[in-house]
Length: 129
Image 1 (cartoon, helix red, strand yellow):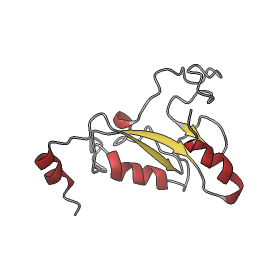
Image 2 (tube, rainbow, N blue to C red):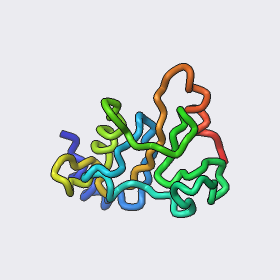
Image 3 (spheres, helix red, strand yellow):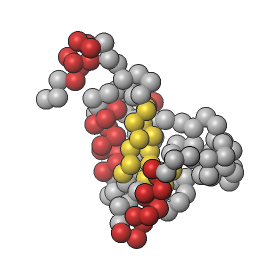
């Protein structure tokens, strides 16, 4: 047991407003316990093929896939590690599956598969802009 709720109460912390970057296998951003806590890039128009906010990443509305250099960050198939860890961090419990340690934080999905072939591209997730 983490005991996070007790610590938050003692310190007056809610996690509200915090954005947590989830650099992992992707996040199922439509998951019932995650969808209300997914960060959204409001300066970007989804699926229009343009880099609306001028940050060098096209359609990065929900985050970005640095292993394939594209905007799709949803976890698919058996590769759900990112969704699981996202639930531990900020699942809100509304779907009855998982409540995380910071259920009021926002999750920014950044997909990376961690293979040697994509290491350089994944490292670009940390470049300064």
